[in-house]
Length: 344
Ligand SMILES: NC(=O)c1ccc[n+]([C@@H]2O[C@H](COP(=O)([O-])OP(=O)(O)OC[C@H]3O[C@@H](n4cnc5c(N)ncnc54)[C@H](O)[C@@H]3O)[C@@H](O)[C@H]2O)c1
Image 1 (cartoon, protein in one colour):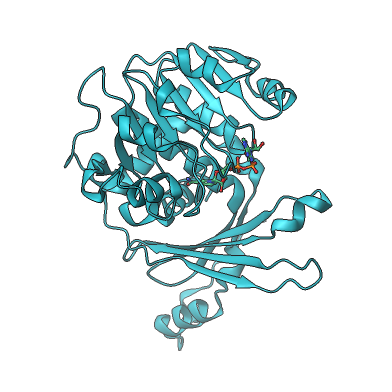
Image 2: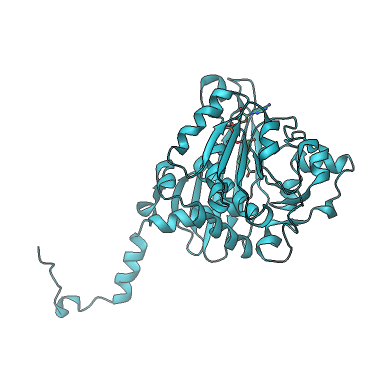
C-alpha cells in the first residue's frame, strides 16, 4: 500500500519541534528491550573475538565500584541465600549490573545453585537495552579471561592442556584455552571419572585429542597448561609435581579459606592476578600471604598492567607461571556489550 504523504498545507499550524517533542515523550524504551538467552550467547560465541574484546576493555577506563554481597534469610531451607550485585560502567556509553542469587541448598532439589540476569543500559540516556542470561555470560567471560591471561603467561607452543574439574566452566575453559594456543591434547580429570568422560561429547569434531584421566598427577606430568575450576576447599595441585615452563590457571576458589593449589605451588610460580583487590578474596592468594610464602609486592602483575603493556608476562621458557582469577564486573560489561552490539 502506498504511504499517504501529508500535503504541505496540512502541516500548517504544527510546529516541527512540537511533533518531535511528543514523539520523544511517547517513546517507551521497554518496547526495545532485548532478551538475550543462553542459546543466543552460545550461537554468537567466538572465543578469539571475546578474548580481544576483554583485552581492549582492560586497556580502557571502566568504572567498577565494589560489588554488593547481601546474605538473606531462606527459612524454608534453613540456610541463608546470597544476593550479589555487580555494577560497572563506561562513561557516556554503557552501564551494566549483574544480579545473581546463590541458593546453596538448591542442589538437593536438582536445581543449579546460581541464577541471575545481566541488565545492560545506555549510560547516556539511561535506557535499559538488554536482559542477558547471566550464568552463560559469566562462564564465557571467565573462560575468555583465563585464555587472555594465557596469551601473556603460557608458552606460545603449549601443546597439552590438563582440565581439572568437570562443572559448567570446564567445557568453556577448554574451548577458550585451545583457541589461543596450538593445543593437540586435552586431559580431563574430575572426582567422578564418568563425568570426565562425558565432557568429551562437547568436542566431537575438535582438532585436538581429548581423554579422561584417573589421576591429577598423570596429567600434571605431561601438561603445558593446567586449568583448575572446582569447588574444592583443599589444594588439588601440589607444587612438588609442577615442572619448569608450566602455566597454572586457577579459576575456582573464591573464599578466603578455600584453595586449589598448595603453598609450594605458589612458591615455585611467578604469580599474576586478574585484579589485586579481588584475588586477595581467595585462599589461593590469601593463605600463602598469611603463611609468609607470598608477599603482596611479589605478585608480578594484574590483567590491567599486562594488557596495557606496563608489565611483562612470562620471561623465559623455564618459568612456572600462575594466574589466579575471581572475576571482575568489567569482564561482564565487555562481554555484554559485545553480544548486544552483535544482536541489536
Ligand atoms: N574466577 C572466576 O571469574 C569465576 C567465575 C565463575 C565461577 N568461578 C568458580 O569456579 C568454580 C567452578 O565453577 P562451575 O560453574 O564449573 O561449578 P560447578 O558447580 O558446575 O562445578 C564444580 C566442579 O567442582 C568439582 N568439585 C567440587 N568439590 C570438589 C572437591 N572437593 N574436589 C574436587 N573437585 C570438586 C565438582 O565435581 C565439579 O566438577 C566455582 O568455585 C565457581 O565459584 C570462578
